[in-house]
Image 1: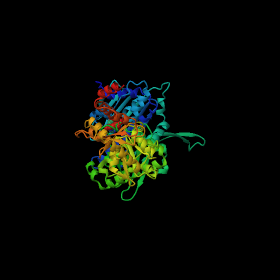
Image 2 (image 1 turned 90 degrees about the horizontal axis):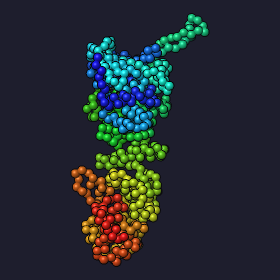
Image 3 (image 1 turned 90 degrees about the vertical axis):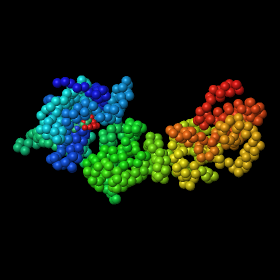
Image 4 (image 1 turned 30 degrees about the vertical axis):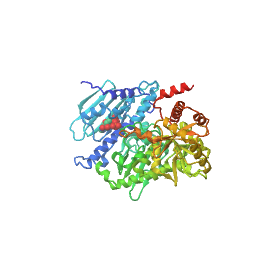
Length: 624
Ligand code: ADP
């Protein structure tokens, strides 16, 4: 019989599995059981609408058989089964291979490579090759008269041929590898090891996982003697973890469940388990991952929670259950209020589902608020990873959610560390009426802005906006607790006393002619040149007039199709700086050069580039 080759990506993965030094090889069992359970789910789901399925709910089961002598483990299910084509398609290629990213392929640390691939993708069926030298899959698909056998000993390919099998379903037989110095594969032939693994990883599986167990029991006929009794036992409790009461569940149980179900290698940052009764009755078990899911920033990423109706999976990713700003949340919802044979299209309009979604949204917000108060460090960790989502959430849909989200926001601040808006307002100086912020690429760049000193000197804290969306989100908020937001780079930043205002106004009057000349020299680049008393020891800075700030202009002009949006720039010159004297004494040609130099410097400080860097450098060299 001709051997068929695995698809290229599958081959790589397979090779990795065969030579794996992954320390959690035991997960193979979980993967095979979960495939078996999925296959049963599919048949059960079919039975709801298809009378030709003769099995009833109680007939479904997953069977494990151990054969010590032949070093075999057989995992059988009476689920939907696979045809020859399906065997080939499903086991000859792995579904997720397109998105598989073997980026560490040449990495020295094979273990790291293993863990990231196995951890991220939960490589399913192939993980069985971590412990097996040969695998046989015998399957009969529902509705088919013939059965087929798929056999593979690894990378050199696989065969599929017709075979005998009485019942619909699938048997997966593993031929375990020989033990080595470092690896004890024989342990998987021990009934206690297997039953322990089932409890650890697959306890919640809704179908009985059955195995013949032998126990030494007292001999009823001969006192003091023991006999071996062999009996079938159901190894799993079958109660889904989310149905159990919270007091029964340990933190590790949640963590294991999360990792196995949602293919993460790290424990979740936050677990939210809620039981809700009332308008809608449902259990929800949700997790906030510690790291963004591997494809989170790709177009392929789909948000959503698994949706169950009374323990039966209806859909794997119900997007309607999560708002975009919580798209990173993983988990599931189980409600008896939903009809089982509801279609995806109908789900979108389901009234009950909308009520559940609303309750979930509220629940997550509350839990995050709690986390912020009770474990600030963890919250900051969360916010650094997913805070951007929340900021977009404030901005999205015309600010519909802004009030519900505003107290979840954090910003770095001139006080060091992160501040919430509430904290900021709570510690505002008596004389302070507004919330000050500054924009820039990162906190250290912002902390060097010339305008910052004057505001800080007043004793005012400044929030640092380092994400492009920040200023837009804040525009959407308009105010917090009655306090307006002000960009410290705004031309009309109002922090001076009346006397100071009067003084600077007079100085500007006196130098009016000079300032006009500088403006003309800059040839339309700026809308005004002004003397300022807000720059501390720095000579110049750029500020803006009108609605559009520098940061907004940067963002808006990057958007495709939008015209170049320009901010109205104001060149501010420090009225106390010796440079003013220099400017006053300059001839016309010199003044032009000075103006260009100062303006260029101010642009660089503001994080803008120069339109003509070589002109700038020439002028600088000239001066020197
Ligand atoms: P995943 O389960 O993540 O899709 P696997 O590699 O574990 O990836 O399995 C690939 C596919 O093979 C499954 O999606 C399923 O269609 C099929 N399959 C695996 N095991 C079984 C089984 N016991 N019964 C029916 N189909 C199965």
